[in-house]
Structure formats: structure tokens, C-alpha cells
Length: 126
Image (tube, rainbow, N blue to C red; front, side, top):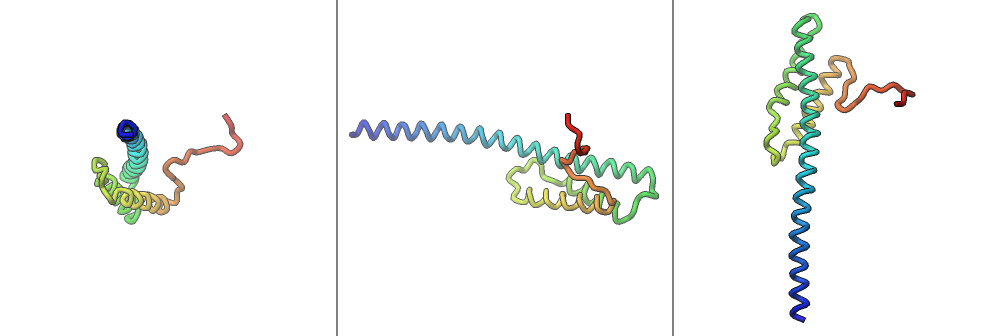
């Protein structure tokens, strides 16, 4: 009976350790994937805003003070986003605020741009 309990305990401990290792690996892979997605999305917003800023600086007639203020605010939010602090409790709230600011900017410009959207032609199939 004692040998049976010892085998059971050993099996439990080995299974527990294997589960911990498996969980760490899975968590690491998920973290890499999600971190890459967030970085890609922020890069899209930042690149869009920087290019827009360049265009508006070239042709001051296109720029409206409210749009410039929104664009500057978006750039500041992105630059201040804590990419290195994965334990930041407000990370996703800040990301939602950046998304909302980008939507506000595109609304002010009267354009329809979304991260992840791909221009598609209906009926085209490749």
C-alpha cells in the first residue's frame, strides 16, 4: 500500500512539473504572438499619423487646428505607450484610448481607415 501511494505521489509530481513546463512554453508563445500583434497595430497608427503630419506640414492649407491637435495627441500617446512593461495593468485601456484617438483622427479627415483592413474588390478571387 505504501509503495502504491509513493508511486502515485511520484506520478503526480512528475505530471505537475511537466504541466508547468508545458504551460510556461504555451504562455511564452502566446505572449510573443500578442506582443507582436500589439506592436504591429501601434506601428500602423504611428506610421499613419507621422506620414499624415509630413503631408500636412508640406501643404498647410490642408491642415485644420483640431486635426493637428488630434494627430499630435495620438503621436504622444503612442510614444508614451509602455512597451517594455508587460505587467502594466492599464496596458489594454491605453491601447483602447489610442484606437479611439485614431478613429477620431480618421473621422476628422473624413476617411475610412482601420488597422487590419485590406482593400478588397468584391468578386475578385485569386
